[in-house]
Image (cartoon, rainbow, N blue to C red):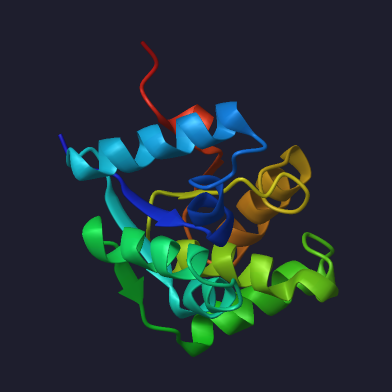
Amino acid sequence: MRIPKVYLETTVFNFCFADDAPEKKKDTLKLFEEIREGKYEPYTSNAVLVELAKDAEPKRGQMLALIETHNVGVLPAHADELRLARIYVAEGVIPGKYATDALHIASTTVNDLDFIVSCNFKHIVKRKTIMMTESINLREGYKRIGIFSPTEVIENE
């Protein structure tokens, strides 16, 4: 069976340290455990690295260490991502103020990954975003991608 290729959005790294959301933290840590076990092929992007760099130490270093210790590939940016992200914003999928969220979804799509994992329930992991990006992706010649939270991805006991 083929290992799913997944994009880890910025909030996934943050929730590993979210003591104020213990269930989400637990599920996110379980996701990283499953990545370590080889259940997923993880990727992220330079956009995530830029966002993580805004956090203060020691959290910034801890989040960046997750990328290294879990062999998370960093996808190179290219014009097709920007074009698709602009379409998502122009068509009202993601508000322009949060264009980086559109870029995360576009990076997942353009790089032919299977799904994006996010804890951003305001702009990314929501029904409207899932339905609209699916329609736009198909129209623009891309496949449908999954948009999930860590809870939806991990194996339950």
